[in-house]
Length: 149
Image 1 (cartoon, one colour):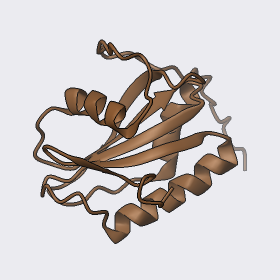
Image 2 (cartoon, helix red, strand yellow):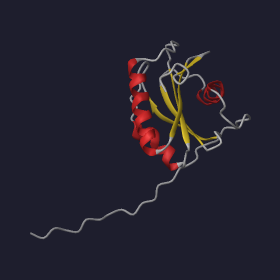
Image 3 (tube, one colour):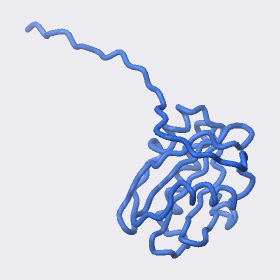
Image 4 (cartoon, one colour):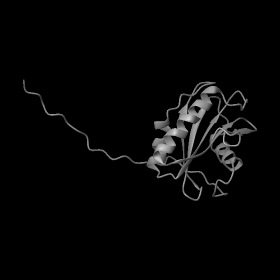
């Protein structure tokens, strides 16, 4: 039996800039800085958004990507999706953020599990997980500040 040849695609992977946002502070020095930038980026949304912010070695944000848009109260996030943008952008570190449309900033068991999985994956790849923020309308919670990271 003669099998036909298999065609293999030759590809190139690139980041594509969709738009940009002017960030006057230049550096992320605290969870407050990250909250202010992401709040400006995210605006007022009615569903859960999981976002990754990539930073260079000087903690300057280089890019932001919405990794997943969930339902009213859930978002399924895989480390490979979060870290894909970090690898492509040569990020030294990342900061992840998601919102709680319920306006209750306490982390759920799923939030804690995702953070733990991200910590392990980042450690393997040599990318620092700076923080995981849960944001609400007028406040936020830093998982680093409460000792999860």
